[in-house]
Amino acid sequence: MAKRDYYEVLGVARGASADELKKAYRTKAKALHPDRNADNPDAEAQFKEVNEAYDVLKDADKKAAYDRFGHAAFEGGMGASAGARGGPRGGGDFGASFSDVFEDLFGDFMGGRGGGNARQRASRGSDLRYNLRVTLEEAYGGVQKSIRVPTLAACESCGGSGAEGGAEPVTCPTCSGMGKVRAQQGFFTVERTCPTCGGLGQIVKNPCSSCKGAGRVEKERQLSVNIPAGVETGTRIRLTGEGEAGLRGGPAGDLYIFIDVREHSIFQRDGMDLHCRVPVSFTTAALGGEVEVPTIDGGRSRVKVPAGAQSGKQMRLRGKGMPALRGAGHGDMMIELSVETPVNLTSRQKELLREFEGLSQDNHPEGRSFFGKVKTFWDGMKG
Image 1 (tube, rainbow, N blue to C red):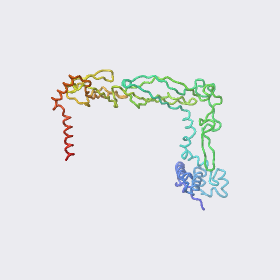
Image 2: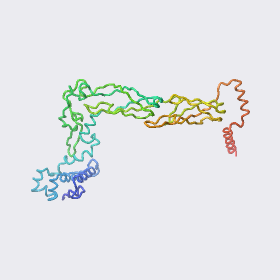
Image 3: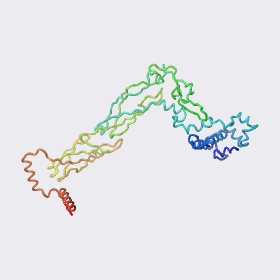
Image 4: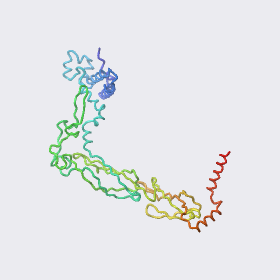
């Protein structure tokens, strides 16, 4: 069976650029990979065909020979010269061609692209989280807190290098500094973390006696943290470079402070607003008057209670709420009245209340409205 044109195999025009050829090869290789086409018996042959086509067209010399002589450039009398240049024999150099698409197919499973990135991720210290509880008063005014954080700090004996005397690590001889090693298994190239250096690309010949070559030691650090006014539960504060020290002198991670504001015995918070439930006597609610209420800044405010006030009535104290986080202005404070029923009445108080009850038939509009609706409901049920 005659071989198909290599450009046709890749689905590109003859004048395609190197980038276009590479893009087309990757697309075809992904689509035809045998692992993704278990139900297609022709997938492996097609996959090899794509690989062979790209192996020729990606090389400038081979491509020029193919453009002039076609498949004959690598057959018969011309086969020796083409073979000397690395021309395709028996399907081409699969490992060399497939390496271009290897990272696209398996990069996410093998820890990312290239040894350089892997080394960078491995050497950076881990980020740390610290949960910090503050009172509502501290959240209102802001506060400076001293915290103790257990972490991994750079070893002072070796300066974080992990080597005795602070000597520099040397390139790993197994992976030549790549952090990964590859092995050819049939048609596949398998990549794994270098067993000698653990993916770092470097090794320590004489490990530091203090940190055993890790470059880091466990240590508890004391830090001073500024908590800005207006924080609320869930607020996150980032302290750059205050996390774990990097491995063998790498950059340190960050420390994240997560704020948890304690519940208050008087105030309930809703964003920038505060709510305060204030009990008033039923005589004050009936006749009107004033009550003194606290504010979150430690001050006091007098609030007028209108005559005939009911439980649940709200009044607003503007600007007496929480401050905006890193902004201007304050929220409001909402006062909710709770009319209190007297208890432990004396005989005289009971007598006066009964007398009042007899004289107050027209003083309960809400009750009269409710029981009027109840009577209508019962009458409707009877009908």
